[in-house]
Image 1 (cartoon, rainbow over the protein chains, first blue to last red):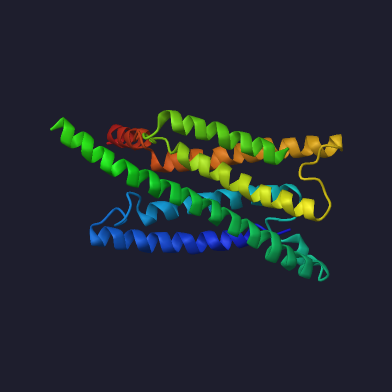
Image 2: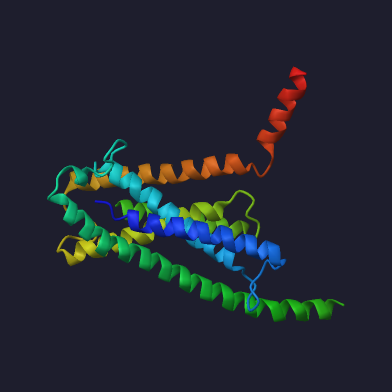
Length: 132
Length: 108
């Protein structure tokens, strides 16, 4: 009904956080994490794209099924009072699960990226010294 | 069907991104993320359907399958549309920038 609203809310928060962290990173002169090769703002950019992309395509699906309309009240479930608790229930279960699942997958991707970049840094150092 | 088509689009774009990586001039990674985000969310939706006793993917009713397939293609086109708009705004080859400067210099 409106499950995509929960990941959309997370996407807004992530967008704001990403912008602030990026500004801090640029102000500090560091473009990368201290412990790894991938900056936090870049990682948040991945989460941002996952969430916004998913929300956008799910919104298309909801429009297709007539659950979302382009005029007020935008959500067709809002028209009938009996459907509002059902909609809120779906947001609390399916919507929250979507947001948590996407964030978990992003967390795993970040761990892999950190692991890969940590492995790559010593290798690149060796190749540089070998080349010199 | 919609989930399967979006997952297929996600896999294909990921392969395209990987072939050209680390160069990502045309922001294919963004298209990958759009499709992967939707795929993950629809997976959760499918699991919720399973819990409610409905099938993960509808395969029995032909009309529902056809409608879902059409939705899948629509969703893929929408993803590409967003990516194209983002690409034109970013304009990595500065095509639009050069075009507008040309037009401006011609009008002067």
